[in-house]
Amino acid sequence: MNPRYTTDFPSLRDRVSPEEWETRVALAACYRLVDRLGMTDMIYNHITARIPGPEDHLLINLYGLLYKEITASSLVRIDLDGNIVSKQDTDYGINRSGYVIHGCIHRARPDVKCIIHTHTRAGIAISAMDCGLLPISQTASRFHGHIGYHDFEGPAIDLAEQERLVRDLGPHNAMVLRNHGLLTCGASVPQALNLMYQLESSCRAQVDAMAGGKELKLPSDEVLQRAAHLYQPGTRRPYGELEWHALLRWLAAEPGGYPPYDS
View (cartoon, rainbow, N blue to C red):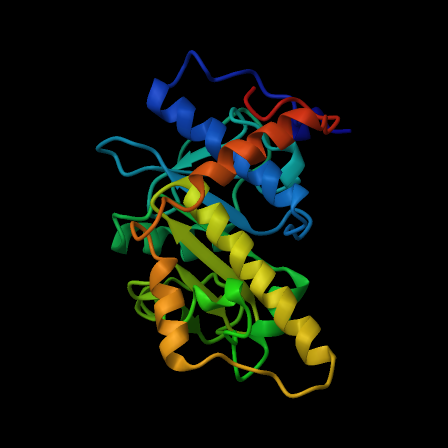
């Protein structure tokens, strides 16, 4: 194998700030968890995290690594325009679609610290349905009135699409990219991951229910509004935090055959 395409990178732990390293470790864990949860698409898609500090820089994956290969030290530091600020000495670069989709949302939404984009089987299936995501389950009810939709414009490489992506997401933390896939964001890596897991679960349940060929039962709008409110940040508990620590224990207990994510 070409040594310029290695996945074994020297640690950056002593070369970046403690805040950046903490963000790198959390983001690398998120990539590994998305793989374990069955939401990857080979080397494609992206998860980004904002690095604390005045520069407004992001971390993103090298284009060519599987999610289960990503480590804290392999992540690339970029600005909001997709310019590489720093990365390891490798022939791997970054995927333009990553910052076309992610960069504009990070710029428009300072509250967003992490964005996850997926191309899952169930997510793509729902994205191709006129009805979109239906609130037919408790899990899906959290998205009632709290999800955006963005029409397909082809592969996301055109900067002109960024304005429409931001507009269609609006104040929400979840969006269906029509005929494309899913996107979630959050005030932390754990929150964004929790939301994506719930959105993916909702899509899978809907595909299964519709495959049954029977008429679907929807709760009343009053019930759905109350349920959706109870899932919003700050209403009951910070969704994602308890789950995050449990998921990290799961990740640590199952060796993946690759360097640890926090290396």
